[in-house]
Image 1 (cartoon, rainbow, N blue to C red):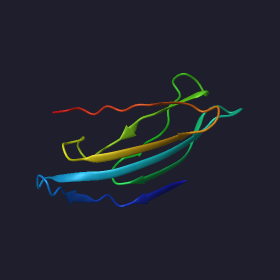
Image 2: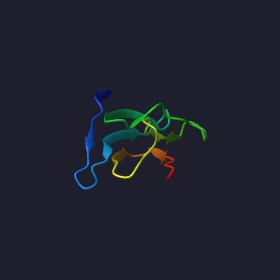
Image 3: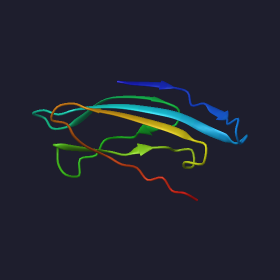
Length: 98
């Protein structure tokens, strides 16, 4: 299940620079069929393209993406992960400072 709200860019009052505000909420469960990402909700340009299973079905790897050219000063990105019983999850991302 995914609910998307259009991305909004706003101007920070402290520096008068455009910045992105984004929220990503994830829910993972585990069980007989392994660990699964079962729901995502996002607001803004932060989302998950797809879950990966490089270690097998029992551990889901999640890589949040921020596609509009990377994270810059003033961006506020919030990630909430709910991992329920038996859900093995690795969540990681790469933000480069340039």
